[in-house]
Each structure stands twice: as structure tokens, then as C-alpha cells.
Length: 467
Image (cartoon, rainbow, N blue to C red; front, side):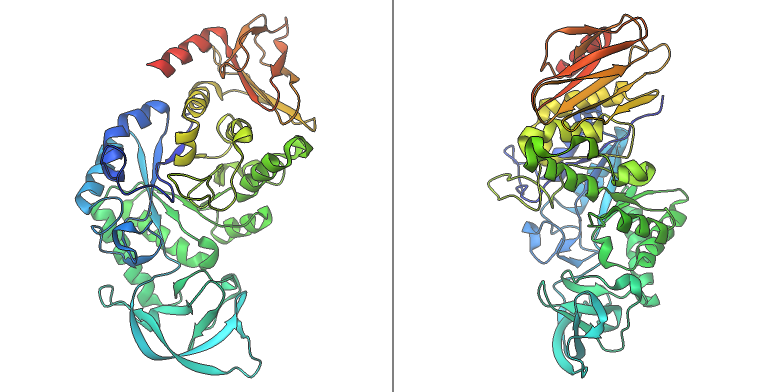
């Protein structure tokens, strides 16, 4: 049977520089590598590891110097190198966060000619008379040998966009501004410098793949070109997933087409549906939960998730960020991304901390019981479910039932006649036996999820959970 891959994001926006034991992120991962492997994770997504404008308190997205790996919130270069080696030694891949859409904290260049343009079309000035002006812009990065020729626009705040003189933008770059200085991927010199950094980094730090930040704001050819160069140098098809922040699945399909199916995407349409479902309670139509999502329509290139550092509940004394799923719907949300055979899911640090037992149980079921033919029953406004036939010769069939309303049932096949099943979540403590054709009426408590595994497998999984 094929291994079910799952990514762990072991940090969040409000992660303290040191945990309660005095360990930074890198030190903690070195200590926890064995446990991460035992839970069932196959990869870890690390935050940006280069120096940021906020020094050793920067979360990592205000990139200042690609080559400086010491002055970070998460540890120094030697600790990073050791962490990646330890994770790899435990069979865990390491994906590095790449921030290519902007740089921050450069030295000011004076008298740069700019044009105030529309946020959603950098080719169209706000003033019809095309009034140029001069400004001082931090586009000089002597430690990277970069200057204004390597950037195409500057965002002095979250609203305005200043196009630099001589720059024109293709249709794919007509996106709202983000922050800092945007890299100009039409500059051959810039792409070569970025690739040189990628090769330098990869020669020093174990790299199994990449997470590309804010891909919506970058020409697709820029991200694809960098990835192609890294894959070529490595001689293998390194994994890549991009953050294309859009809840319209058609936009995600267009990006996948423009990058020739080489880059996976986080499934924002599904995540926003999970948020909506948690807010709407039993008024949300559960039969639509999987429709118009990337995981449903392009499962091989989808990375479904419930939360990330940009969308998370309050943590470590910090407020919430973005859009997050209410606790009452967390069991249903994680069942949708972990207990199915579609996509390459991500589990967030915030949820591992807040719902440890539930996620560990789901990971056991994912590892052992998401194989064979899947039978879906998304046929009711409140109660839905699915089942897996399992592999021949294994006791790994499974049925999952969830509801956002009253307790419900779902008639599902496991094709295992006269087999007893137990609820791995222990929300229900009785057994259910299939009939002579291997079908049964599987149950679920009010506003909850039940995961029915074969009784013999149930005890095996509990023993592993408690070991």
C-alpha cells in the first residue's frame, strides 16, 4: 500500500522565540523528530530562514538578506543545518519557505522615477495624465548586489503601488500589491542572482522541497523558473507547493495550467468552506463541502489545510489571524483533509497544540485505513460520510460519518461481512456489525465525527496511541 504523506507546520505566527523548556524552533525539532515520525508525518514545512527586518523577532516574511541565516527568531545556521539532517535521518522531508515576491529593509536610493498606478493593474496610472514623480525608495541591497534595476514596483503601504521607471507588466502580474519591493522576474540578472542564492542554500542545508510565499503576486514564470533550476541542479523532482491566496478554484486551475502542473497549491477554496461551515452551524449544506475545491477537482496537485500561520485561532497570548475554523467543527474539518485519499494535507502547529489527541487518532487512521475503494455519501444537508474497503488481507477497512446537526447515521459499505467496528474517536463506545454484504448503518453523535475501524484494528491503534 502507498504511504499517505502528511506535512506538519511546526510553528505559527505567534510562536515564542523560546518554548517553556528554553528551546528555539530548531532545537525543539531536533528533540521531537522521532515523535513527529511516529505520529505519521512525512514532511515538515520550515518558516523562512533568512534575516528579516525585525531581526531575531521577525516571523520571517520581512526578508532583508537571503544569505544571512544566523540572526533569526528560530535559531542560527548551524542549528538549522543540524535540524534538517536530524529530520532527514528520521525519514522526514524538509520543505523550505521561499519569499520571492518582495524584499524589505534595503538602503534608500534617491530620486527614483515612479508612477502611481492602480493596485490591480500596474500598467494603468491613477492619474490619466501619467504624472511621474521622484521618490527615495529602499531598493539598494549591497549585500545582495541588488539595486532598483532588479525591482519593478514599490509598495509604501498596503494600499499604494509605485511602478518604477521603464517597467511594464504582463497580464499575469496584474495583482494587488503586497508589501516592500517586488522583484522583477523580467530581469535576467535578477533571476540569476536568485538562482545563485538557491544553489548556495541547497549546498549547505538539506532541501527536499519548497513552499513559495504569495505566488499570486509573482509572475508564474518566475516561480517556475526558479523551481526548474533547483530541480535540475538536484537531479530529481523536488516537491513544491505555492500559496496562491484565492478562494475561486478556477483561479487556482489557471495558475496550475500556467506552471504546467509543476507546482501544487494550498486548497484555499476548501479552507474557506470549512470556515463558513463552522460559522453557519447546521444551516450549512454539508453535501456541498467538497464541491468546487481543488482537492476534489485536482487532488494530485492539492494541499488541503484547516489552518496555517496566516489563518489561525489565538495562540500564545496573540490574537487570531485571518479566517479560522471554530473548535466545534475541528473534528469535521480535519476528517475532510486527513481521512480521505485525496491531496497532500497540512496539519498546523496551532491545531496540534489545541487538539493533540484527536489529530493523533486521525493520523493513525490515515496511515492505516485510507486504502482501497472509497465510497462517498455526500447526500444530506447535515450528515455525510464515506468508507474505505481496505486492502486484501488487511483489517483496515473504515467508515467515517460526520454531522453539523443532530446525531445522524449513514448506510455505508466496507465489503467486510459480519465484521465488528469501533469508533476510534471514542465519541461512541459501542460496536457496529456489518451485514452479510458488508454494509452497516454507521452512527455519529451530534455536531461531531465518528471514525469506525475494525475492532481488531481499533485495539492496535489504541496501543500505538498510548505507546
